[in-house]
Amino acid sequence: MGGVLNAVSNLVIVAGYLLVPALWLPYLPLTKPVLIAGAVFFVTCALTHLGMVFHLSHLSPWLIANHVVQAVAVMLFVAGFGRLLREAHERQEELKREEL
Image (cartoon, rainbow, N blue to C red):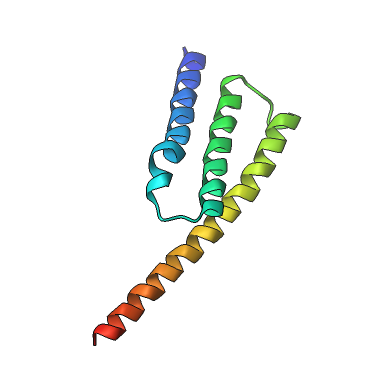
C-alpha cells in the first residue's frame, strides 16, 4: 500500500509542477529568458518526482543530469525574476515621487 501511495502522491506532484508553467507563469510579466528558466525549473522538478515513481537511484546519470539542469535553471529564474521585481519596484517608487 505504501508503494502505491508514494507513486500516486508523486504523480500528483508531477502534475502540479507541470501545471505551474502551463497555467500560471504566462500571466507573470516575465521576459522570455526568465519565463524559459522558470519553465525548465518546474519541468525538471516534475522529472525528479517522475524518477521517484520509477525508483531511480539518486546517483543515476539521468537524475544527476536532470538535477544539474534544474540547479542552473532555478538560479537563472530566481536571479531574473528578482531583477524584474526590483525594476518594477523602482518604477513604482519613481511614480510615487513624481506624484508628490
